[in-house]
Image (cartoon, rainbow, N blue to C red; front, top):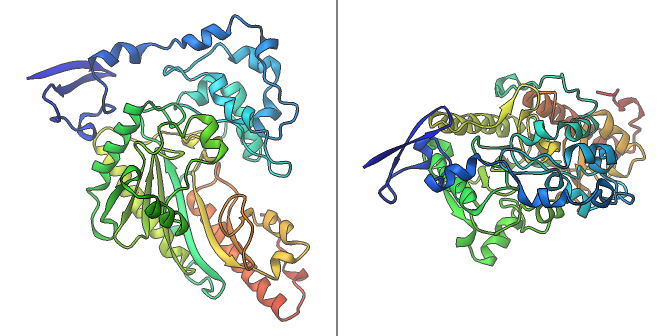
Length: 421
């Protein structure tokens, strides 16, 4: 027997027999049944209504010790204007800012301090988020339009980075599936629906992308630790961004990793974003890594679109992701590169800034360099294309390796300091 439910613009066919329907084919979020339709239409957040009993002064958070973009922007006036609002799925201003309230930030590193709970968050709370986006993304304006370019053939060079210095190359991005809330706001059923949908989509990949899905709750602790150590798997949820924003709820339920047989193309499911798509390999052939990234990512998007599950995107913000820092391309193109001499040069930080690059330690965020090895990547995400951002990495790393070689010979690099990109 078939039932027809009115959902969105058209009728969605749903078989009442258990296990007969596929979330990928149905065009609806998995697990949404008749008893959920009325609830899905409700926009009221009862807990938020309860808070309205208290004045703005009584509810406004103490941000006096904070160093993050949210704290820099959130005035009492903005808080008062937005605190009574919620998105259609019930995400509120306090949900947006909680991670930044709980984590004042690093004295030398300006964190973002907020998250989105759904696609609509960026519109409903734009009085807060637009200034944060501008602050984080170099003056990006509400009228600006983002550029997208996933044609790997437009990248110049990238296959000639010296493997004696460049140890590994990696390109990653995030994607959010339309029709679902984002990880800070997912319910258990919704998260499991995203996982089921993703498994079905990824299992149809073939050729160099053919692979297998490994659910987190099916791994031993030892297997998880090994994958984390090999930089294949996301870490356990100890990051304040995950724990204080609600993204670590129900861990490890509904999370997992998919990778191809060669472990050069990976997809993380339900960590900070619905999907994190990663292309990686040892050595300095960023051209090949970027080719695989573009081809694989576009294959995945085509599969989802065929079944009425596109990715969240708009012409202003590009690809919509959980953290405002990742809006635009969501792309981070990085290499592990040995720079023991250059990294101790007094102009190292200035060189990175001029090249529009950023550094992390050998193990990633908030880690130290080991043996002069740094993780160097693009600083920009929004307003420039994927090709533009990877080009900056390729050109910048090539220059820094040449500087390192000069310093090894005891020569000056003053004449090689680049102009601001």
